[in-house]
Image (cartoon, rainbow over all chains, first blue to last red; front, top):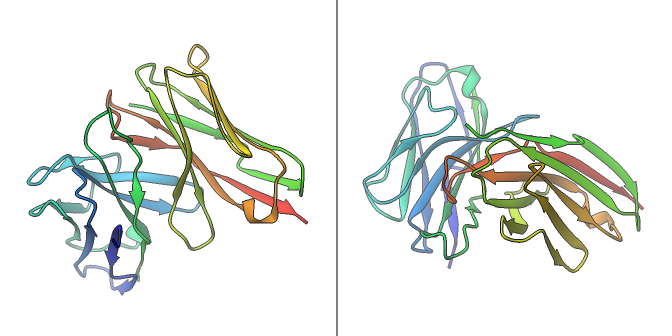
Amino acid sequence: NAGVTQTPKFRVLKTGQSMTLLCAQDMNHEYMYWYRQDPGMGLRLIHYSVGEGTTAKGEVPDGYNVSRLKKQNFLLGLESAAPSQTSVYFCASSYFGASLTDTQYFGPGTRLTVL
Amino acid sequence: GENVEQHPSTLSVQEGDSAVIKCTYSDSASNYFPWYKQELGKRPQLIIDIRSNVGEKKDQRIAVTLNKTAKHFSLHITETQPEDSAVYFCAASSGGSNYKLTFGKGTLLTVNP
């Protein structure tokens, strides 16, 4: 049981390049999330998904796209990277239903630098 | 939307002392309040959470209190140890759901031996 995993762990991009971050979870969770973490800013929600085939915007969605084609995977795409997207990106997942724990389990993070 | 304020941003205590971190939230519909601990270079991990139907919850040296009327909740760590040094984040459920969270900006706790 690996929990939540993220690929890659580190990446350096040049302005204008594109890339996709992959998040995978093996806990059969319905909900999945992408956050970015910047110094002094806490964790800010980029996009989230409440189930396979669904996505929704979070607090800071501009410049990012997401897809949830399979229940266990949640992809975050940067079509044209900008220096402002330099950050640590965390994926998380949680159970469905208020009667169960709503704990969000986080992946190990991806450190992205855009030059 | 939900807004979560967290104070202080940094906190330094001596080993064995208590530490208190406070958060306020804006959405009266929020009903789930988790606390996460993040060690340097690691992922955030849940340490304790509380729901709106209780006022206090304890787990060994950690406790959380909730005042729904005042819309604030606090994390209390007693008998602090050097391994408690980390960044702590509070969060509140937002958008009328339990699954979407708004996080505070974090508190860097340093426990000095």
